[in-house]
Length: 445
Image (cartoon, rainbow, N blue to C red; front, side, top):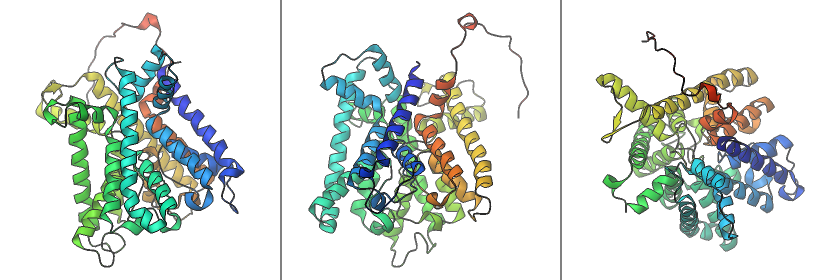
């Protein structure tokens, strides 16, 4: 099988296994009941590091069930090939060429050389960052919840944040809303989200180049530039749109620092994280539109986040800029971008946009008469496709058909539009390779 098909089927197998584990009586909290659809939805959301939930994670699942969810988050966030390679190395087994190719596909590395070494190095880095994040969160959670429960909550939320999953254990409190005035918790969670969303290649490049921007590879420069622009632009946009909204930023007693902190966190979490400090249903329509746009863009390639990715946005903007300037080449940071890259970015954008348009029609039919606005339904499916986890409606209150569609979107978004298309496409006939048809112009615009 092609690497794309192996990755797609691998995620599917993990989701189905996770569904079976979550349906076990051992995984369900006393007095609670979980249907097969709820187990499948939760497992898909965890493996696809989305965070959309149809049941309350804190009250519906036992400790074993929560640990299963945490394992699925870690496995889905980093990719099963990274774990498989690490286990093979620990067992002193040889890494085959096929596995190296799968690693190359998973981590978006430029070549096969050093794939195993980079993988092991990144795994150590991931666990170190998650441990550091857990220790910082413990400074707040241990005094609040006690030693044992506080440490458990710290580890759970550090992993969930780094993997951009958005699962939380605060139950009816509503994600991180009770910490909306706590810079320690919100800044720690947001930094874990940002680092996890940069991508494996960027993190390694930053460490190798000792944070020297000029020496970074073009990919890293693009990711860092677009990420910073989206974070700052999103913060300013959310602040401008929600500054006087009493349901969000203008909560009782809110200071300027509180408003900026929560606007920053809303901008960060829209990068496919799923945690929230502001009730998403209370956002103004303009605020939900801006958040939907940020979710649609998402994180960066080979990261724990979803969306069409920051690099795709950059390539499309660079293409438009080139058209405006009347140039023949598309350039960035004194480098010329290849034509295949532009075709790939445009394909990802159109496939994702097409899914959202189809989904908008489907959900509007399935939820007709439910009282949920079309904007909230679009918000829900953008969150699912970009593996974010934010919801302006009650996900658990949607019809079974709508929940199945969201499951498909989460799976499609985690595996990736291009990978999904390649996994279903047939190999070209060898006799047709190298054949080029005559060129003819078509009028556009």
